[in-house]
Image 1 (spheres, helix red, strand yellow):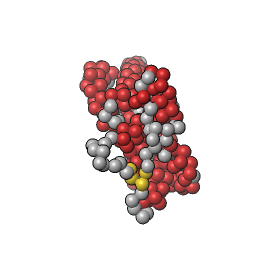
Image 2: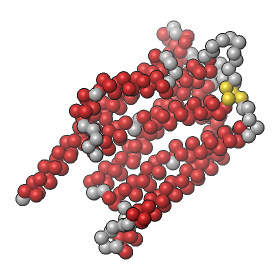
Image 3: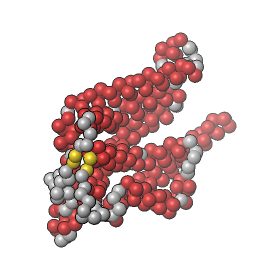
Image 4: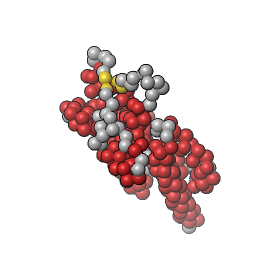
Length: 284
């Protein structure tokens, strides 16, 4: 992966292994700087991050809670009114709140910097790609970022309120009182949002695995039933153990799997087309 300066020094644009490592190091350094800068910004906006985002899903007036409660009133199902009594959070360590503030700012910086991190790695791999592959990769950065943020938002608005309601109201005995530690609360929210953000990358994963020849559309179609079983198990792991939450996760994942099959078919058609053109050029 050669830069313009390296190309000037080397007419063939080739770099040694150590030069590749040096180039990669600077891409990583810039990515870390971006995360650190955005972390500082997130740290400064403490009230917005905590009161309006982190703590909001446990409140009755949160968007998802209000929508589900209205739906419950329409269908006569009171169980849909979730988080009607906000959970009380506690801190049990002296430095607990400041460390929580730092960790949350770091996670926020990582999430916001995700598109830039992808862009840095795209710049690193760009010189090794053909022109048509560079165009696809450039669009891939945008698509990958959009899918990641869609997954994070889906986890935040759909799964987090349901998880909070179930986990804070579940009890093994009336003698045991739930006193939720703030670190545990934030850890649950973070793991759900990051997990759904990564899961929403299924179409991108299908594209690259098909590109390198590890999977084919026929393979994905043949093992669709196995994939459905894995998706159901995965949904059961990242959601509370109730059917509604699991279905809420399963449906978009199944859609993403089908989208992955469509993308895999297009990649295979393009590979076959490129192969035919290559063979025709060699024959002539």
